[in-house]
Image (cartoon, rainbow, N blue to C red; front, side, top):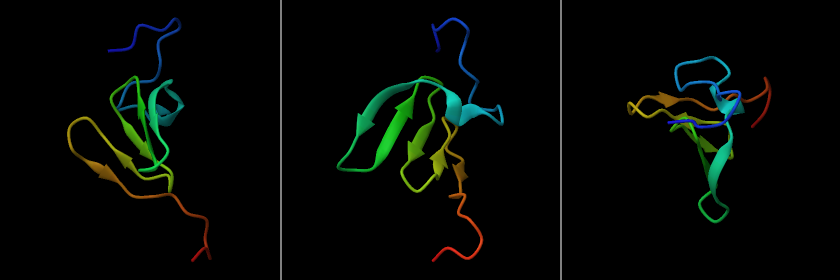
Length: 62
């Protein structure tokens, strides 16, 4: 899916949210990364296979 050089991290990689942004929707609060991951403003993620990664919030945050 990624045509960048060097290639962006894949959707299964721990650094997947470092992939380049190909689309941004400010009103809905998400970015589509070139590896197919939807990255939400609250740091939650939706992977291409449908798995959901919960937001990473600092301890004590409400």
